[in-house]
Amino acid sequence: MGAYRLLANVTVEHAYFSGQSCRTLEFIPSESCAVLLRRTGLLLKASESGVAVYFDEEKIDILRLHAEDDLVLAFKVFSKDSNFFRYTAPGAPPDDSILFFDTQRVTRDAADKQMLHPDAYAAADAWLKLTADPLPAILERKDYLVKPVFIVQLRITAGAEGLCSNKLDAAARKFYIRFTTNQTYWKYYILGDLSKRNVFIADLDNTLQFENLGSTLLPGNREAVQLLSSKAIPLHEQPHQRLQLKESTGMGDRILVKRLPNASVEQVHGDLMAGKIEQVSEIYIS
Image 1 (cartoon, rainbow, N blue to C red):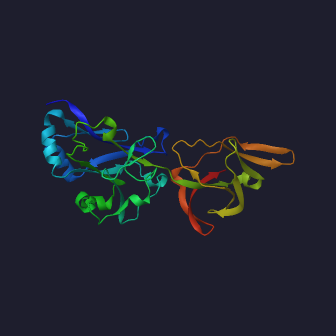
Image 2: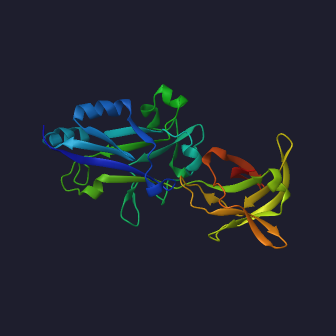
Image 3: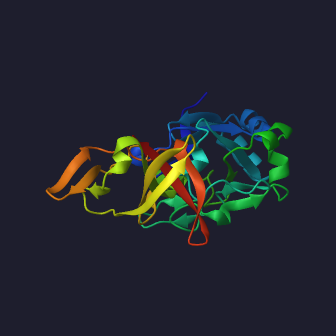
């Protein structure tokens, strides 16, 4: 056995997570991919936010023979976080589609990274119908019940510019998928004694404003004041917003809650706003 060298690497970046590292994903080789890995002697290694494939230098000729006959490695990618599509744009694909990425279609970004989508972030144009090739050959029956969050294909070619070439540097073997985060309007419900006061939300960073939508009755006949952000706010694993609940009085403003809780992906739903369905994060303060 010779030394193993990197053949190809796929890294997933996500704006939701600190450091952009998407730590919730699991790359599972399709059935045909698992067979090819064994035949070619390739070694698979999962990373914190992706997958890497290594080849045995002593078996490069065998690998090239396979590559001449259309060597394609397909991975089904699952998320260990059931909220993945709540914070991931472009959101969950339609029931009949899935996100699909292929190293045959590469776009270089400003840092010269090889992106597997044409824009800065993965978008709805990456959705592929489940009936469209090559998905039927990749997906098993169980995958239609619990769909992967996306599919990625690595094409191993034998040409001078292919992944089997000795001329490629490390950067040419690295591919990236980058997701941005969903944005939601933040709606605070102020309950209890606080709802009877002249309350408003102040942003210590002076970037957000909140509109008082008036009072509403919640289940249990509970009255609440609604305070809605004037714009949608990107979701983050560790939100950095610094919001305070204040009361306006004749003697000036008074702090009621020094640090309001930020939005959570657990409390996101669609709401009709100005004739359009928008994503809203609900936060309850009592």
